[in-house]
Amino acid sequence: MIRPLQPDEMNELIEIWLASTIHAHPFISERYWHESESIVRNVYIPQSATWVYVEDGKIVGFISVLDSLFIGALFVSEAFTGKGIGHALMAHVKSQFSALSLEVYQKNHRAVHFYHHQGFRIEESAWQNETHHPTWIMSWQAEETR
Image 1: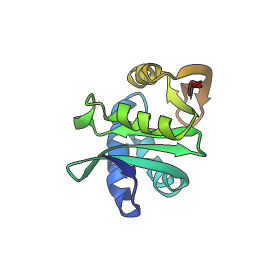
Image 2: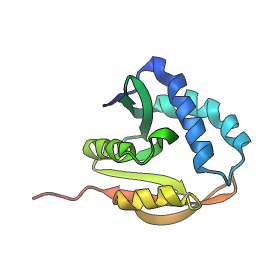
Image 3: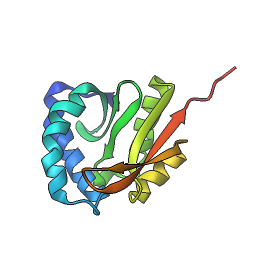
């Protein structure tokens, strides 16, 4: 089931974010992610529209969209990857917005592949000054129906 994040679920969401982001980015120091937790918890998530995927009463994935345009986070608990949860979350936000963009580390091949399969296309290369790694800016546009 996909539904909006509730205010009392932040700790559960941050646990998923931290474990998943460390796993997805082995080329970046874990310390960086731990140091980023406060800004994710107190700035990024509160400023985003965030939906969670709940299974058996537990959050197992989430997606956050900033400014009705930018996917700032899409994470699924490791035990639940490959079960269609990321697809379902992406389909949900695609039904809410007609255009989306995101930034993904170039070395995160699994995510880049996933986003390509979701219809996102690379628009440009960027550089993450904080981590010293290159990223891709990717975008998706809904097809017009006639």
